[in-house]
Structure formats: C-alpha cells, structure tokens
Image (cartoon, rainbow, N blue to C red; front, side):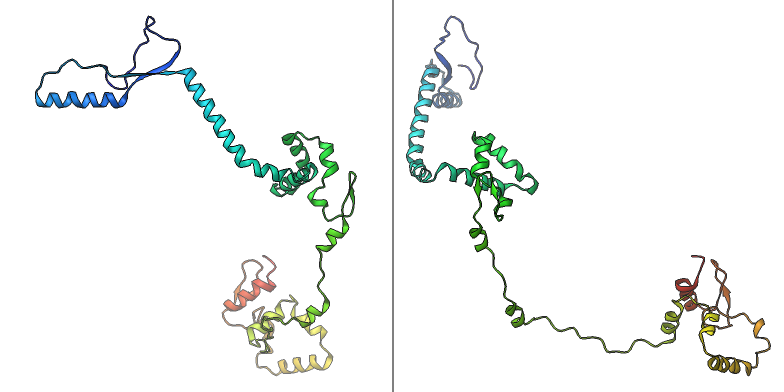
Length: 275
C-alpha cells in the first residue's frame, strides 16, 4: 500500500483521459492504517487486505456542478435584487447621471481634480462627455446663476440655502468672556529702567545739553562748579553710561568706558557701535 499523500506516476496503459484526477479515500485509508498498527501491537499476522478505495473525479462532472451552482446563486441574487432594480427604474437616466457625478465630485480629495470628473465618469459609464456636460453641472457652479451647456441653474434654490443674521442679534449678544482689566499700576521708575529708556535713543550727553534752555544749563554748570573735584574733572575717566568713576573698564568692541555689569548690559543693548 503506498504511503498517504504520495505522488504516483501516470501509467499510459491505464490512463483514462476522461478523468480529471484521482485520489485515495482518506477516511478508508486512515481506518486501514489504524487497523494495521493495532495488529502490529498485538503481534498478530497481517492478512491480505483490500486496497484503499480510489475515487475518480471527472472534469466534465466538476464543470457541470460548478455551472449548476452558479445558475442557482444567480437566480437567488436576481430574486433579492429585483426590488432594488424596480426602485432604480423610478429614476430617469438624467437623474442617475447627475447623482453619479455628484457622488464622484464629493469623493474627490483634491478640489483641483473636480474638472476631470466628467471625463472619468464618461470612461467608467460609457456615456459621452457632451451628454454628461449637458445634463449635469459642476459642484463649484451649483451656487451660481449661470447656464452650463444648456442647463439653467435655479437661483431660487441657491438663495433658499442662504440666510442673513439681523443686526439686532449682535446688539442682544452678551459675551461670556471676562472684560479685559487694564493694569493701572505705575510703570517701574527704578534707576536701571529709567536709564535703559533714556539710552535707547542712542544720544550723546552734549545733545541733551544743546536742547536745554539757558536757565537749566546754567543751573547744571553752577552746581558742577562748586564740586571739589571740578578742577580735575577733565582728568577723571567716567563711565559712558552712568557717569561713575569706580572700577572703570573698556568695552572690547568699541572702547567705551564701563563701570559695572549692569552698565555693560545697557551699553551692549543701546550704545555699543562695534557689535
């Protein structure tokens, strides 16, 4: 007995051309194999047994069964789809074309490709492009009052879809958002803030003195005159930002005098010409 699922060579003398293929009966072969294994375990002598039953499959029979099953399924589908076909007959061909074009335009992801919808619909449905353009209108022109290839768009339908909000609605509307409360706190008047604001103009000291009147200028120079270091004032190196004379250093970029870190920051932001 050949092993299960074995490949057999076709014998030309016994080959039947009307048989599509043949196979051993798997159930009968399994029972015979179990019986042989049981007899071997019991130590009994194997007796001659019948060969496994062979089942022949005819190609003509298989095609006939397949064709018959397809016809039966087709009749059942026709019986199910009959009410739907009757519903489809209620719509005219023009309405179906408009519906298909509308659906394809809505299904288009890129609005720039809407112009290609009539050609695609003509290719898939077999309807001429001219007929599609005559009985349908583009989605972008549905709200227009123009005529598209003999089809007049109804202005009344588009106007019914529009509505205007009366002005009284805005007057009666009360916002739930909290009103903006302006910060009434006074601005910072610290020395650094005031100095930074004055230095943003990038003006030299002499320009301020030139804009002063004679009385203010005389008061300033009179107060300076009574200082004890007035005689050595031209020899003192002062900060270009605050006028201090302690711990003076030079700016690497432009060479101006700076006395502290704060003055250095203000100098870089407002007065430095080398950056």
